[in-house]
Image 1 (cartoon, helix red, strand yellow):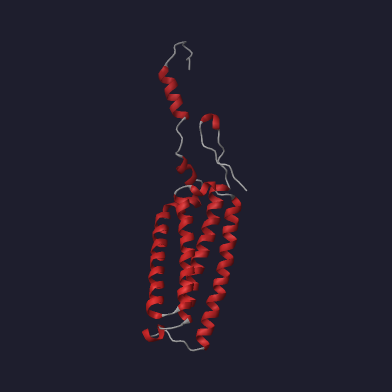
Image 2: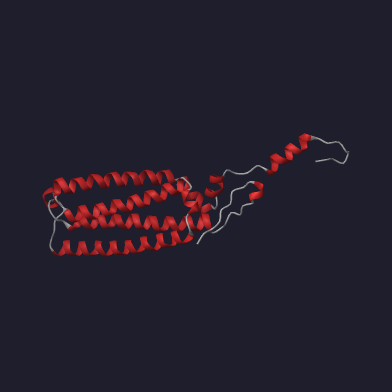
Length: 199
């Protein structure tokens, strides 16, 4: 940079470079893509923590149903619920680690609709279990009632499947809108990082 007085000042060049090169870190750019996304990031660690707690409790209940209550239907549905909880945990972890930015739009599309479909099946299972449990007068008030097949508890685990699937579905859709709706253009000549939406 040469000023009007004809004298060259290297300090001016340095200041100009620092002003134009003041870029946000890549993860900061991605996670602050929109205000809606910011709300997700503020408590993503809490979401991960609660999901891990849910998985641990799921394993505890599986052991109880196998070795103590002998409620095999509840055990199976509980195990399926844990699988969906792991899927939710992976989704949160991918978001936290920025792996999710390389996922295609179609991945989020199918993730949303498959989880919604599974949640509908789980709702049907829940209603069926509660209807049968009511017709057969299955109890749930005492420890003795909890032993053996008891569809009240099986239906309860269908509730958790609904929780995990709906949670994953709408989180995936929210991330898709927040991180991919507005593309971040990259100028490779300036050394920036490019985000390209894939289908």
